[in-house]
Image 1 (cartoon, rainbow over the protein chains, first blue to last red):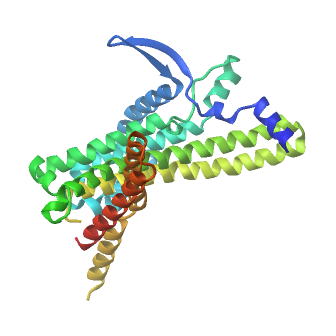
Image 2 (image 1 turned 90 degrees about the vertical axis):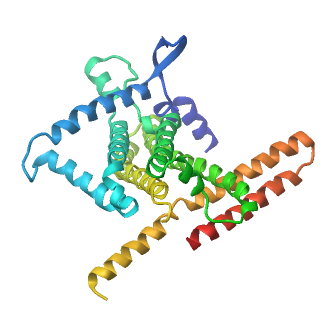
Image 3 (image 1 turned 45 degrees about the vertical axis):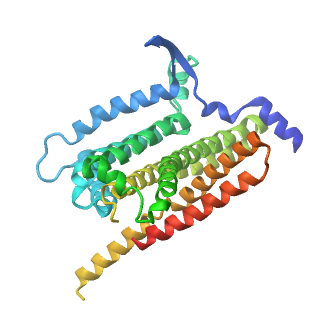
Amino acid sequence: MLEMTTRMLAEVNPLEHVVAVPLFEFSAFGRQVVFSNHMFMVSVATIFLMILLPLSVRGGGLARRGFGNLIETICVFIREDVARPFLGDRTDKHIGFIWTIFFFILTLNLFGMIPTRQIIYLVTGRENNLGGAATANIWIVGALSLMVFLAIHICGIREHGLRRYIRDFVPEVPLLMRPFIYVMEIIGSLVRPLSLTIRLFANIFAGHILIATLFMFIVIFRNYAVGGLTVAAVVAASLLELLVAFLQAYIFTFLSAIFIGLAVNPEH
Amino acid sequence: MTDMDEKKRGTNTIRSSLKWMGAGIEFCGVISVFAFFGYMLDAHFHTSPWLLLTGFFIGFIGMVYLFYKESKK
C-alpha cells in the first residue's frame, strides 16, 4: 500500500490540476502583477457573459424561444424564489447583483469542467496552461465573497442611511452590552462571507482533486480493466461535478440573497 | 383560513427559518476568532491556557445570547 502511494505521488500530482499557474507578468502602478490561468478563466468568463447574456435576451416578443427562454427561466426563478422571499418589494432594486453573482459563478464552475488545456494540446500539439477551475482558487472565491460583503453593507446603508443602519446593526440589548454585541456582530458579518468562500472553494477543489486522482489509476496500473473502471468512475464523478457546479452557484446566490435581505429588511 | 393565507404563512415560516442557514458556521467562526485572540494574548502574557479559554467562553456565551435575541425578533 505504501509503495503504491509513493508511486502515485511520484508519478502524478493531482494538485497540479487545480493550482494557479502563472502565464505572464506585467507591471501596473509600479507593481509586478502575475497573470495566472485562473485570472485568464475569469477574463474569459466575463467576456463570454458580457456577449452571451445580452445576445440571448435581445429582441423577442412576450415569450422567448431557445436559449433566451432558458436564461429568462433561470432569471425568473432566482428573482421570484430566491431573492423575493428575503428582499420583498426591494427585489428589483438589488436583483441585478444577485443575477450577476449566479451567472458568473455558474460560468466559472462550468468552464472549470472543460478540459481546455488538453483540447488545445490535441489540436495544436503544444503544452499550455490555458484553463482550470477558477472557483477552485480560494483567492478568486474570496474576492467574490468580498463583493458580496460590500454589497450587503452598501445595500443596507443605501436603504436605511448610515445612522439607522449602524443603529439597527445589533438587536435591542441593554446599553452596557451594546459595545460587546457590536464586536460580535462585526466578527459575525466577516465570518458570513468567509463561510461562502470556504463552501464554494472546498466543493469545487475537492471535485477536481477527486477526478484527477481517479485518472491517476490509469497511469499507475496501465491496463484495460482498470482503465475502463476509471473512465466509468470519472464519468460518474463528472456528472456529480456538473450537479455541484449548479448547486454551489445556487447556494452562493441563495445565501447572498439572505444576507442582503437581512441588511435591507433588518426586521426579518 | 383560505388556501392563500395558509400558503403565505408557510412561505413566511420558511423565510424566517432559512435565515438561520449560515448560523452554524457563523457561531463557530465567531467563537474561533475570540479563542484565537485569547491564544495570541496567552502567547504574549505567558498565561496559557486561561485567556484562550476565556476567549472561547466569551464568544460562546455572546453568540448564544445574540442568537436568543435574534430569535425573539
